[in-house]
Amino acid sequence: MNTPGTADRGLRLIPFRGLRYVPERVGSLAAVTSPPYDVVVRPDGLHHLESADPHNIVRLILPQAGTVAARNAQAAATLDDWLAEGVLAPDDEPLLYVYEQRGDGILQRGVIGALALSGPAEGIVLPHEDVMAHVVEDRADLMRATAAHLEPLLLTYRSDADAATGATAVVERTVGRTPLLDTTTEDGFCHRLWAVTDPAERAEIEADLLRHQALIADGHHRWATYLRLQQEHTDPGPWDYGLVLLVDTARYPLRVRAIHRLLHGLPVADALAALAGLFRIREVAGPLPRALDALADAAGEGNAFLLAGDGDFHLVDRPDEALLSRTVPTDRPAAWRTLDATVLHSALLDHVWRIPDDPAHIAYIHDTAAAVEQAERHGSTAVLMHPVREELVRDLARQGVTMPRKSTSFGPKPATGLVLRSLKLG
Image 1 (cartoon, rainbow, N blue to C red):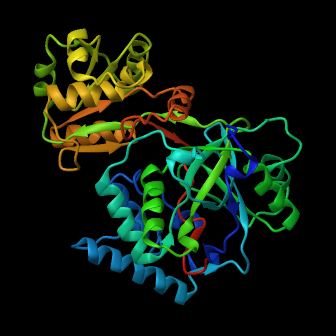
Image 2: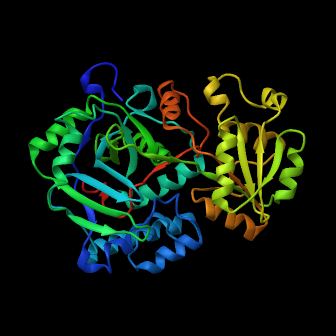
Image 3: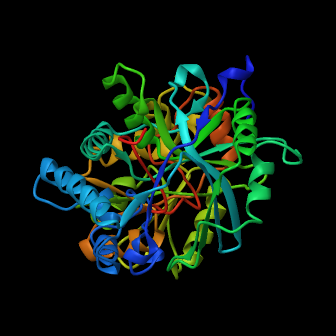
């Protein structure tokens, strides 16, 4: 994704002194990592990670205590303790890092560094989803307390995939060297991290990235948090930069998946009854993969959702045009108005089911099977979504149009815990 205008208006990435686990002080590097905070399926996933190793990073990104203030104070104290005990230690000098993930038929490589922050109006880092104010406030409280960026955002850009120089060329050269760490997590993904120590190679990366703009693939709330905390610090300093992983999707395309909704307290029978006459409703055969195939087929023809939670799967498609006309805003491009997430939130949640978009009523779950299992366990409704094409996401972002929050899940996401950034170190 090339940036219009002058060459110095693109991505400005600088090295930083990464905080990393000291392998001798933990059971294994795999045991102290975690998915990003919003992917952890609570409480089951949280308890599993906490029990994997007493120093698992989840104790920092999702601290557990009775109040918000107590949780954040606990995370800050834990971070200080781990640094004092030598569980975590900073690298000796500021570095850029090359990061590789390999598994499930995917190979993804990118560069981790501290990126100069910029607002949407500057057109350098493009968001594609709305954010929830309470989540931004939650992440801001945690970052203030710990003075640290605990997990990198996932940003994508597009270069000339055949370029012999630039950031991607440095990445390809670096992966032939000995990594700083090499570990395989329980999902089968292998993670490797290298330091880019050659000043000439760092300069090559930085000069190349200045010609590009990026799309936020994962981490909209953390990016919004970076911007909020930057505004709170008027003097130039470390708050002007944010921890990111930049992936060149011309070379390493990402996988785009849907994020599902769990509607607390709404039984499937009640959800379906409210849709009668407004959507076509059909029961489809399981198991889950087969039902998702039916959803994919229906989504190819228009808006479609799969409802689950009562032991069966219900395909909901072909919405009533009159319903869409009176509920979907008309001040956005047609591509936005016809998004499944737009129709779900504008028509179904706001007008048919009348469910407020807050954590007491809706949970956003990345894992399809987990969404179904939780709905069945609690007598609720899981609304399973079909993923959006990456090209559509980029097109809307270029137009400055944001999608409904939690519309997409790009991946694979970087493992949390491999490298952290302390704001106290710069």
